[in-house]
Amino acid sequence: KAGVTQTPRYLIKTRGQQVTLSCSPISGHRSVSWYQQTPGQGLQFLFEYFSETQRNKGNFPGRFSGRQFSNSRSEMNVSTLELGDSALYLCASSKGQGGLTDTQYFGPGTRLTVL
Amino acid sequence: AQSVTQPDIHITVSEGASLELRCNYSYGATPYLFWYVQSPGQGLQLLLKYFSGDTLVQGIKGFEAEFKRSQSSFNLRKPSVHWSDAAEYFCAVKYGNEKLTFGTGTRLTIIP
Image 1: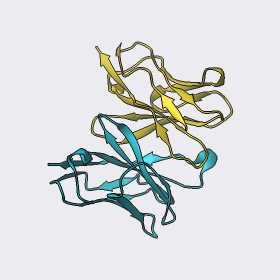
Image 2: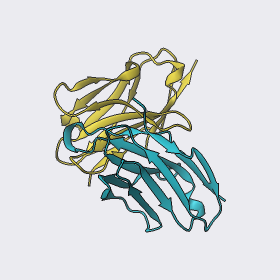
Image 3: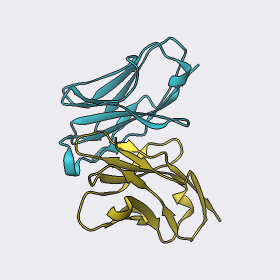
């Protein structure tokens, strides 16, 4: 069974630009969550999508947005990039039914550098 | 709000020595608990998880963890570490359909 895939793996952008990151979940998984990882703040939850609807949201500005398609693939968009957006962005998928057995499996991440 | 604490930022152990990484959680109810490992530049790999039942859980790569309700702890252990275990380890907690909350991580260094 293929794992979670994220594209691209590395990205360099300049301030003010926007960026779109993509995540393909494990087959059969309907939930996709996004996290930002930085040395200073650690792993911070961005949002979770389940069946094309945002189910949970972290404390990030509106510049960070996402969506999920009918095939469960998800994209995350960051507009008006700032230097502080440089981070490893991780995507995780799970079956999404919640509760006892809903374990998240992570992709390798997208390393975003903002210059 | 749920939270998880990993008191040790960095731990150094000799190859072949035993290892224990600490994790404490807060909140009232019994949570779902996880340990993940992250190698440099990589994503997170699930080591083990605990939902209920036997409080000693076995994971991959020879790791185990013990849930102690009285101490609100879920410490990760390995009897004998290998150089390839050098990585960052994250404890995480989840309640129901709420988001997964991570600790700040413990970086493990292995010396020959």
